Length: 204
Image 1 (tube, rainbow, N blue to C red):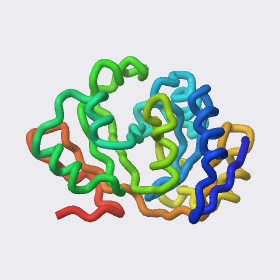
Image 2 (image 1 turned 30 degrees about the vertical axis):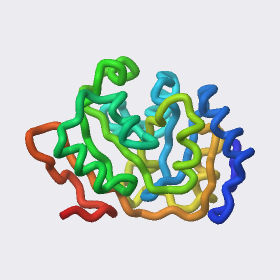
Image 3 (image 1 turned 120 degrees about the horizontal axis):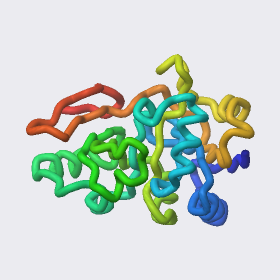
Image 4 (image 1 turned 90 degrees about the vertical axis):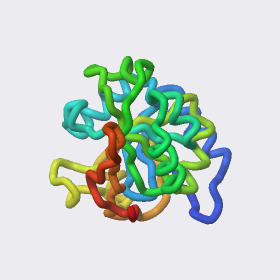
């Protein structure tokens, strides 16, 4: 596993471009978000999605995979038309520590074994992720980096991540210590927006 350490005050563009090229070529990557460190790959990387599930010892349905997108306009490429109420809510809260569960379109479904009809959408408010996403050929598909112990198993220390995932993952983008705060999850697949999980992001 290659470990690239980034300075929170200066993101080295050459190293970021190197990481993006690796991800575009099929690498799996551990990266920071505005909540918890995540494990991901390009959405279009079917082998990478399978690998992520094997690494975390989870079936695809259990992995809680989400799309990490650069902006709301990009989200529209992977979902049916977004309801006006949902769109306004997304504009209000994003980028930020929120996961919006939306219906997925046929293009997204073909990359998953179970043709998942719903997908989590994230637009994290994190400087490294914001800088990385425009360099990628597709959104990242990712899940929170944890073990089977749930929240107690989330990783915050890059040293622990490097020790436990060396030889399993291709890249670690080290941005220093993470947090144990999960994203707030909002289900937008029905007639009303439902709060599924209260996390770091506040909701009215």
